[in-house]
Length: 541
Image (cartoon, rainbow, N blue to C red; front, side, top):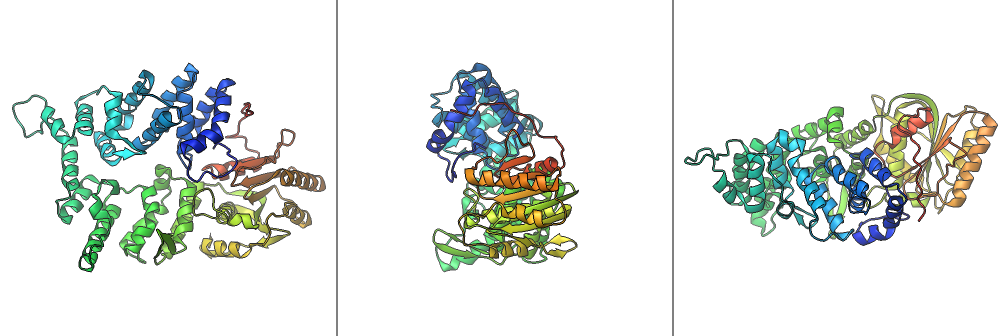
């Protein structure tokens, strides 16, 4: 989002301050602060990582421009969807902008996030779930935040949960006794007290496994609610290893089959569930996972980012990893791999097109680097995006290029579904022992082809100044030779030199892994202006 020159693997406050403060401050000082607010509003829910949004919002909220600050605080209701987002926003306000104490505007905005939250007003159990699920993030506790912002509860149910979060269930019950208690007019008659009492019971740790499983089924708890001893395999002695493993397996089976486990949690824990023996071929658990991964409605409601799915696919299909010096292996489920790729295609949601496209994937050594801090090689990310476009195009060709361009065929697997496993393996075999590729090669391939392309898409790690000039020159030569209205798209996964210019609107630059990137690329090639707009801001500082 920031366009930083270099990768941020662990974005500490110091790194963000050194890299992006100048750009954000310059925009605010030049009167473009509301433009930042507008952009943050539009990308809400479409980002791969939340920290850039939280940092930019914190900078705007604590800036000297009162209008920008006011709008930034109003925006936290839309941008911060869960308490952990709110805590990260407060963390950046405190450490990046040197917020001291709890100023009135900051306190009121945080309090309003709780008391005016529509989801909480409609479902108080959801509020109780979030209070217990997100107890502490980024060194900031739910208890500390609620105590410091002094929210005014709109009703007794809110007051009961606020008292529980700050003082515990016993104190909350003193003011609002359970319905069975008599002699007090203030009685907590809804399910919140039952939920919190059951949660505190299993949290104590002195309960049998059956009680924990019954509680999970009753309240559809998430894995964050479960006591650590039921989620971590004990290794005190050989005698107890099998017993704890079975308990561990039974907990995860219950979480998967009897709760609405979020899509992100399913994707993140595929390796864990496979190692426990849950995702064996044709099992009930594997069928449910594959069904959820292939359900467009569930994927849309979960708002999962395509890059999350792709990263999970890259990690899962290897069948091994190393953690804390220990080699960890698992039996890869072919059904899960196929479901993950289909899930990636669903999240892209590309409409069919009859445009003739040339997709060119760079095969230089740098393409073996990872995308940001993920385990996903740039080459695999590029191949998956190319395959997604290829699958929705009736007329497209794919090439890999280093010194020269060579045709690359995606092989159908079954029912017109392309084999992502085969594609990723063969794309690795195309690696060339060169540092930088010849960016004229794809255009030379296009000129030698009899057919004229409507769009030429380059996928590479980064583009420097000289390479950008080469792409512009080669593209211009191709247009003059064919005398056609062709479009060029340059996709990079690191901060790069822009290829497009104000004079040539037929070139689109795409950086990173935006959730809507593929859709916008197809719109650009089809001359569809929807989703594109001119933003006039000065980024110099």
